[in-house]
Length: 87
Image (spheres, rainbow, N blue to C red):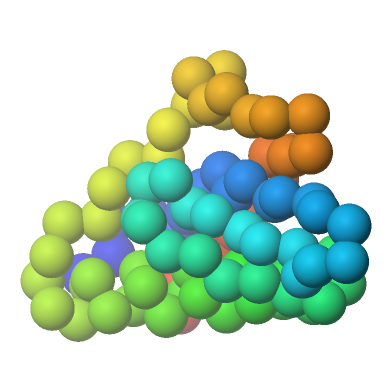
């Protein structure tokens, strides 16, 4: 059972010319992508929901998010926070 009303995880968005925008959740070890930034954000939101609900349904521990100041990114990367609100 979820123990919070809101979950917020950092996601690393990687931008490379001519390629999809890749997204990586370091705390969950999953990586969606998208053709546009809006598409990548939507994919990240959907995947975060699926992963957290799967962990909850299986009774597995939901990891705490890494603080943003502990994540190092490359010049072509950006950190965005992705939220999930359990129902």
